[in-house]
Image (cartoon, rainbow, N blue to C red; front, top):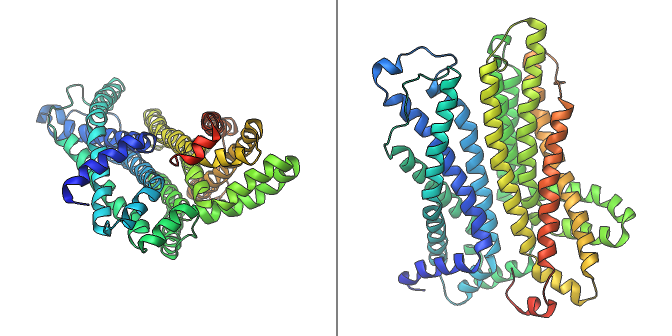
Length: 464
């Protein structure tokens, strides 16, 4: 593979697998939009005339808002990018492994993957940065209406925020590529091809160790949050929110193990209630734990972050009513800020959920065709997918609820002295319902398309 063919091969793979790269492109678009949004807010404050910048406003100020609230949003966006990139590379594992068998070196494979990521970043850069600029102007106008930003502030025309967003997307994408491409480049060519056709590998020791370290870091953050004194409840909230995100990263790393254990427990009732469809669904989920993990991590992200913010706000409001002291968690203006941040986070998580589930299910066309050739009907396959979708939703909700429970328990300990937070049942119920609405139709609807067509042609054709 000559150096001149690398861009051609990269573009060719994107054209052949548009569904896989579409999910990554959307994730990158959202990430660059988020970075552009909050960087533009900082630029508006920094470049403002001195008289405008010194105008007294309600709230902590534009730079603090962009930093504190943008921190979590940008981290979530980058988390979604890394998850989407890992899935995109797994989808083309077989193609890249075959290139290794025809004398492509590991270095050339890494260059090819880097070229794919760079091309996808550049494709998403213009709409992502443009959307971020529009969002920054709308968000600044909303802040000014509430007196939280000086009336004379304007989003500057400097390209610096967009360049920062592009640089961050490239750095994160290339760094994630270096890690995820090792599964293809490290083993011998024949072993890499065998792994791609086997479809299931044990979770590596390095990944398990990294997951354990990240989990320990999340627990440490939550202990720090729980130990905050009564006068530092805002810092406790920030530490608890960051701790929940770190725990979600641990869930992503340890996902195959956790998902397999939960699927084993939840699969038993499915086998009893639906002997055929339940047995197939349970076998698929337990046998392909990496695939199940890819499906449940976005659901856990959605449930974990949304429930954490909702429960923290309810707990702080209850404490404020009891003590009569308001904090930035309970003030009306900051409640609006948290609602805006929650909407942004839910948007990221929802897009990640739909992208991942649709791509995962569409990639199983050959598997469905094989089942049809051995006698399974389309109705039976849809039943199987419905059970899989239900189990995937439950596993994702349980993992997300565990993260939210740990984070909000630590925050409640700092606020009230008790680890039992105030849970807004109706709001959390809507979060669970939203996760189900995204997950079940995403899997079943895509499956309805994937089981169509002639089975013989799909088995003989290219996978995915």
